Length: 531
Ligand SMILES: Nc1nc2c(ncn2[C@@H]2O[C@H](COP(=O)(O)OP(=O)(O)OP(=O)(O)O)[C@@H](O)[C@H]2O)c(=O)[nH]1
Image 1 (cartoon, rainbow, N blue to C red):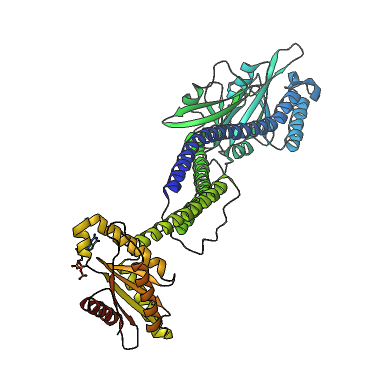
Image 2 (cartoon, rainbow, N blue to C red):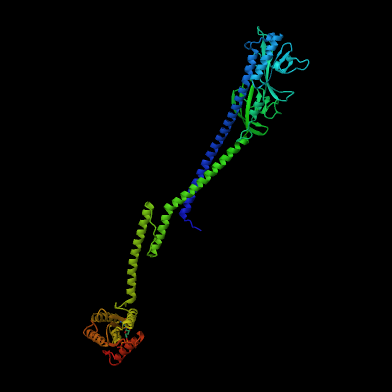
């Protein structure tokens, strides 16, 4: 699994926290905005529906009321005060017929008179019929001189819902002689009220009168009942229209009403609040979901971009520094970005390289010093026994590969114990130092002089056969003899030498020169043994 760096986790934590805070703030704002908008929208739907139903009812009723006005006026050419005359009755009935045929919604058009008589086409009133006591007659009298409010009623025979408008008929002296009335079918109105809405399935319309009595309702069992719940919420000082919310037996409702004053009707359009809230909550949920997903994606994208621009160069820098310190030849191919981080990274990279080069130089110097120390005799500053072994090993190898001759000389100061005993150890040391310098000055640069131990010395001479070695030994002898040491004067040495041959090994030639040196001692010291 991919390991995230600490910086990546911190960037992710910061961006996520900021995103969550933003999500919460935006969510609350958007949720309240959407809720308010949703309710406004529902109110606007209610208002529009209510208005269209009201307009439809208005349009439906207006010609009927006009017909009532026209029929009852002298403009129709009928004098209703002469209703008892046969000729007038025929005139009235033929006018009714014309109106019934031209205005589509008229179910019945009829007139009643103060003597109880009824004038109507295609209907025979039952025996003893008295127009004056009929509700439509009384309503028109009550509303005089205006047209009576539209009163819905169910026809006994057809069971159809009808609405009735009536108006008083006057003689020349403005005395009431009867009532003209039109009954119109309410099918179209009931149909308009019953139209459903796809978005809000519980929307419906109904009509009630100014006392809260339901006049027309899609549920045909309800007319003639009181609707106290909504009526109590409609403002007493009656506005032409308005919105309200109320509690209808535990069901919260949102409603809009419109008054049709000339009918005394209130058209109400209402909907269950839960029905309105449902789509709002769905919109809020889906919107918030999109916001959350969008924000989380943006957060991830921000983290990714920040990581690419901030963390990747730093990681590469870390790798590069590691590679430099590990001394890798081929460095990562990554090119740092052209920004502050890239510039800092390049500077650190250069600094690391510089520091490493400096360290390497110091290390080389230290190693060289260590090598010198480990190969140098502390007292005389010439090669020590370890160095001489290395030189010998190298010469033996070269001899074996290239058959290049070389010789080994070993010498020891004669009676050195006496020097120490007579003049002290420090003088002895000084003799060793000076002797080494004298010998070193005598031999070639290519020859290596080393202290083998105590007062014993070894010289390895490359490209030197036995004869040449003897020559060197004699030069050394002559140099030592001619050197005068400050306190003890002259010293002598006993020397053994051998040329390395194919029969020798590194160990055997050392044993051999040591034995020759011993023989020189035995033979009286201050001499060279080469056989
Ligand atoms: N001052 C000093 N003396 C040393 C050092 N190394 C060895 N010696 C002395 O060298 C002397 C060697 O004595 P011996 O082995 O008896 O040899 P010698 O007295 O030189 O006699 P021959 O070799 O037989 O001629 C001893 O007294 C050692 O203490 C050193 O580094 N400094």
